[in-house]
Image (spheres, helix red, strand yellow):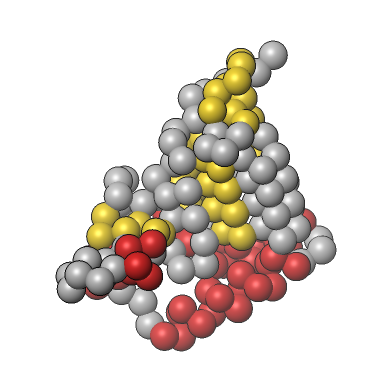
Length: 166
């Protein structure tokens, strides 16, 4: 069962995607290998083995961080380019770290979708629940907190639409 919206992390881990300790350790190991792997084709194979859905003709740059806790929630369509040191996160543990109220310790998980032909610039951050539209461009260093419309360029922290792709 695949989720399409934000869900409580504990519920997702328990009901939707239970995983063994072996699987968790394997995902983390594959992730570390993929981040530093020089041949791009091998990097893609390692990310796929981790559980990330990756289409054809995709490039993922060195030292890219694709969430290793819930990689199955990341979908990368065809013809996507991800520059180096990009971070894609599908879980939010901010409340877990800062909570003082019992029961408020649950983080959330939400899928990330990178649509056909989009481009992610160096060192940008894609947060949980974001969809980057077709042919959209995310500028270097941007922090994307909301969906990026198709054919738009976004820049800044937080990322804002600055113009259409020309």
